[in-house]
Image (cartoon, rainbow, N blue to C red; front, side, top):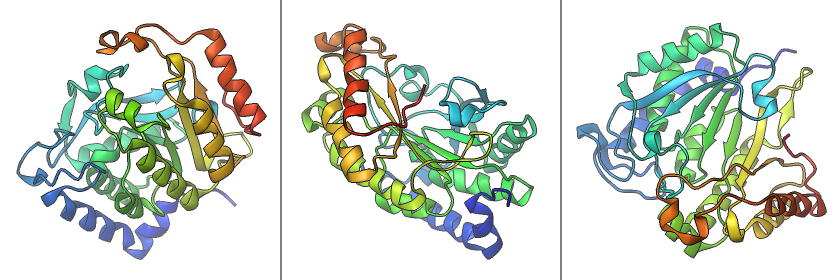
Length: 302
């Protein structure tokens, strides 16, 4: 049987329309992310994410630099949303996440982007930094699904997500791809201005796994459903890699598909923090890989 994305079942039942309405209601006193700023985003941009009633998109295109199960032979159909609910001082995409480069779009325009990426042959719709624009994504998805969208939906997040918002996405998202950035509250506070990140992140990732399970691949080796976790190794063990990987193996699943990333380099404001002023060393990265293997985490991206 051919794969059918989860949201098509919700479309047929009318539940997808209800989710759109429920999500937009929360913009009036926004609590979509764990910061729960409470601003009325229907009246203009505000709060940590600086986003109003319309989503802002920086770019959209087939992406061939994502994880192998997402890229396949024809690329991952990425839509990069501007702004972010995190304030990472070392962000490599800070022009988009912190400076807000991009254009505001209506749901109809977002739907057209999804359908265009599908027409180009992409294997999925990959929503990058989606946490603060879930209502707008759902509205665009509803229009696109009514017009024939049938690709898996990837929720590509920094991992600072609220459970009520994830409930709106239950049965909508096929593939969750969260970051797991930190194991320590003080580090999360200093580097991302989110001291509760470790607790919030682990709760969110566990819920994502409950919804979609371990990553499933089709006969071509392309992802169709499940959890894919990213962990960026930071200099001087700042990311708490050992603790993070132990938690994934013991509390989520030893079959978690995991991308341990070595591409950290000082960007944005990183050089203001002495411990972030250099790239990750080869030995730091290899140690992270060895820890993963020792813990039984074998599904490592290459």
